[in-house]
Amino acid sequence: MKPQDTSISADTIEAAIPFWRDAGKRAIGVQIIALFLVSGVSYYLFSNTQANLARQSIATGFGFLGKEASFEIGESLIRYSAADSYARALWVGVLNTLQVAFIGIILTTILGSFIGIARLSSNWLLSKVAAGFIEVMQNIPILLQLFFWYAIFYESFPAPRQALNPIEGVFFCNRGFIFAIPEAHSAHTAMGWMFLAVLVGGWFLNRWGYQRQELTGKAFPAARITIAAALFLPILIWALYGAPTAMNMPELRGFNFQGGLTFSPEFSALLLGLVLYTSAFVAEIVRAGIQSISQGQIEAAKAIALRPGQVLHLVIFPQALRVIIPPLTSQMLNLTKNSSLAVAIGYADFVAVANTTINQTGQAIEGVAMIMVVYLFFSLSTSIFMNWYNKHMALVER
Image 1: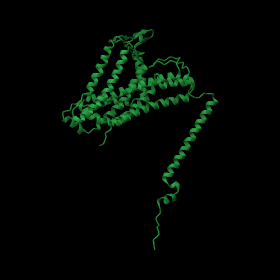
Image 2: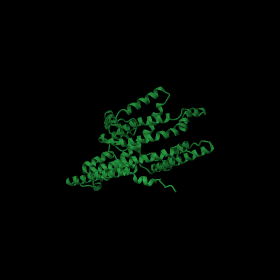
Image 3: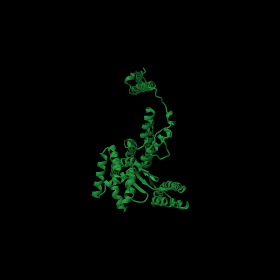
Image 4: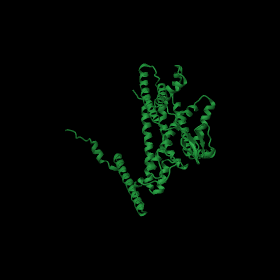
């Protein structure tokens, strides 16, 4: 007699289990419930907001962007007047924020790297000074530092009529730092493009040099060639355009200077505060990255007669960057977001311009939404670039 098949299929067992005991089905059910709750809350908030706006006769939408702004902005990278639209005023704020963030990130990376290396120096005094800088700057809130530097610029420098004039064309006063700059000329535009082209060419030359060194073992002086070309070729372009030397000199007219290039106290205080505060954290990141490198590799590099600078450039930094880049990205994002504190010292960044726009138009929801979108764009752009660079620097397993 043939024995009966008493085995039970997996599908039969799964069908017999109640859905509330099935982890997979239970997870899907929880997500569906959460989606309905979020959708319900969002709909309630949206409908309630619309009803309140309608009751108070407040218009919605972004139509106000085309209207006349009717307010001045203290400093701008592009031409602007009170007769321009709100859209242009907000664009001025975006550019001002980008200016502070871009310059601040560069200076912070340089200063933080230097202090992080100095923190590990065998020189006792240099190491202690670096450690003291880190401890002081990290433990004073950034907003207090901005107030401090702003007060220093306004209280420590004289009025424009008594401005300090250490050299011709340079003035220091409580209205800012004023410098003479070259007069606008097509030669300067050509020099800028040539400098940019040299940097791009130097990047490709450096990559080719690394490939050549891996194949032949011979180093190629790509960095020296790039630096020499960056110095010589723009000067050559300047000479070919007739070597223009005319300068836009600042002159005292009334109660302020006209002409030249001015760094306002607000911009200077904001930039200095952001750079000093953030560089203290970057210094600790650099120090940790360097200390993550095995001491044996450093000793091996010294054993083959590499100079200290070569050890740092060829052995330590290429490996330390893989540890440094992720937390360094976070500090770059923090610097960009902390620039929104500029409103506290009167610098016309995007938040300050958006706040003025909200006060004049009453479009609070639209204004806050634009602030969120702009800073989200800044953060995502920085993250995308740094993630690309981190992937480029990552070790590739063979």
